[in-house]
Image (tube, rainbow, N blue to C red):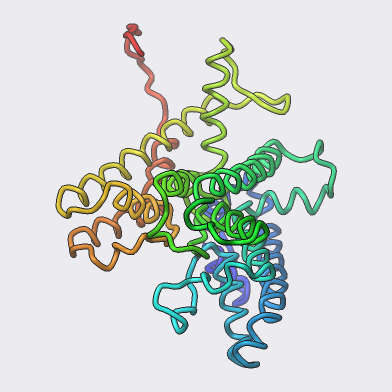
Length: 358
């Protein structure tokens, strides 16, 4: 939608109310009047960040691959990382190798991680940080939740991946190398799709952690997929409020709207039903290990692109299942949630009756 509006602007065509509304929904913005301003901000910010990333990656790729090829690889991987696409051109070294050749390279690892995180924060968070500087207290609630949760997921994911794989994939690496590899695998599953270690050799703990990170995904209005960070945070805050016996759900001295709580719960439920249904279909028709099948399904549902290596062995039916999962994860579930949110409440309500839960 952003590209369609950009083309309209370049051609001098008038952008109507419907197009602005679609743009607003696609980036999870809240004010219709800011649509064109936000569009210009997105385009300029994207070009600047991807340009800086390309320059940094060129410092490594140009000496290795030559000027033209090195520049092309730098630009391609910068755009792919920022857009959380996960496509790479490293198959010339070894098929399906991704960025494993650079597992100990700080420049490539940190640059790609930064691009992935910036792309996954969402455009509204950028605007908040740019407009208000380092004054965290003045940020919107959305920006506070996204920045805090992203930091927690990155730090926690790095530590947990190191604990799970320190005697397996990370064995034999220096402490700095282990830290880089663990950091990369904590960031990339949140819909980026790159890997610097062999995912087919993950332990059960490392595989489960990667599935959870793929399920969570990136932020609303970002280039990433998944069920979204804020959705998971809202569900956790609701659980915490219930445990403490509070009726209202909130954080950072702000109360959350009840409709948002219902939407988060419905989104998580819908996502899990679709993902587990897809996993069951694969397991029922082909004898894959449970972890590998769920890994593929959650990767497809969150539009991540990571694989343990079984994708090429899937039957045509199960490849179709993954295609449907990818479509539902990126388009279908969001569309269904919008349709449900726009329905008017019934004028006549059914009587309330209590049931036993738990």
